[in-house]
Image (cartoon, rainbow, N blue to C red):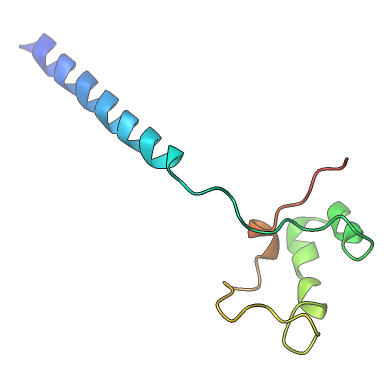
Length: 88
């Protein structure tokens, strides 16, 4: 009886693992714009992320001239979505 129980758990583990793998493989590709590596943003590459995010609203906001889209998520975690680009 113990072997049947162990086999059942092994099969369930494989089915659940395969389901999770298929779910993750079906995820859409990353579509968020990466942080540009230009003269305006290069200074933020050497800062800790949370420190760099404090400066984003100076240029990106309603009053700053580069407004964010209306349905933009919370603005306090910019570098959570907008990843740093690798040096070329």
